[in-house]
Amino acid sequence: MQNKICKYLPAAAITDFIGEYNYIHSMLDKTLEKNTPPSMALIRQLVTENIIFPLGSELLRKRHPEKIASVLFYGPEGTGKTLMVRAIASETKSIVFDLSPAATMDVYCAGRTDADKLVASVMKCAEVYQPAVVYIDECEKVWAAKKKKKKGQKGGGGRGGKNDLSNPSRYKKTLGKWKAKWITDDTRITILGCSSEVHECSRAEVKKFFDKSIYFPYPDYTTSCRMWKVFIENLSGRPLKTDFPLNTLAHMSIGYSAGAIRKAAEFVLTKFRKSKLDQRPLKVSEFIGPLSTSAVMATPEQHEIFDGFIDMMTGDTKRRNDLTALANGEGGDGDDGKKGKKGGKAKKKK
Image (cartoon, rainbow, N blue to C red; front, side, top):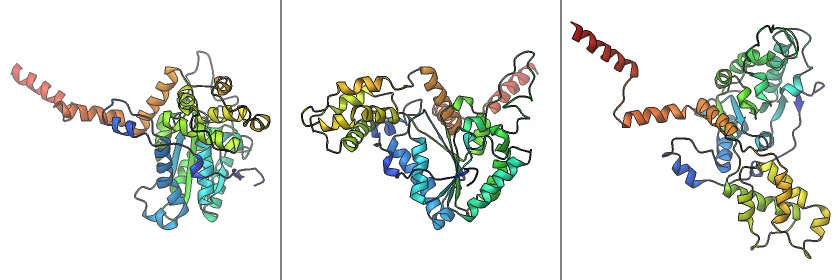
């Protein structure tokens, strides 16, 4: 408590994560070469089944078919990753231990064994006060990818180097060790990690540490419609008129995060504007300016980064290629085929 590792997160409900099922995408996922992003409703379902139920019930924890000790939430900023962590903590009444780099930067960094003490203390307290959530934001700083050194550059010194005792990656090995020891079927403890900069992660280390990963994409058209309706009605305190063009707002906001949509609604629906709704009803044009000032991930390079990370974490691309090869009659181990060809050549020489 003194070092603010044990934290209180604002209360939230799983239903605060607004979204609808995308039935078309779920059908196309079997035919397309690339995976379609999960719908918000599917994310809610995955979190409920794999995290909330096992954390909230000791019986379900023991009977859960998968032993999920750690889950990674990744996706662009403003897509609801932190909101989901808050919802998990609230729904399960879990105590939250924050091991994010921002919380541990100047804590337990006097000696080399302090990182072990920090993780051991957190796990011990989590076992006593379970259910518990160990929260790690900005995972890309804990499991950071190795950067190539420039010619003439020496490593090991300076902030962020190997010898830096405040380096966020100093406790990643200890986390792996204590995770295997303390998070079992008898302990209701889950490690939740969040990352918006997956290109800075060490993919091998992240895949090895986290048992499951969930991608948080930008909202699709149906979810955008739902979000605009909920945000506007909640902020204005009255239902929207049936002829309000929500579909136009949804089309405009494709590529914007849920956070950007909410900020645009908050910017328009000020206290003064709400008092004038009877005399001057809302118009779509009022939301264009505030929405345009929000950050948007529109570059193909950024989409490719997340697509590549999804393929690495799920292995779906490899599975699809294997199934395609089998369907085309190219089944079997590639190495055996090569050996057969070599063997055939050897016989001809004789």
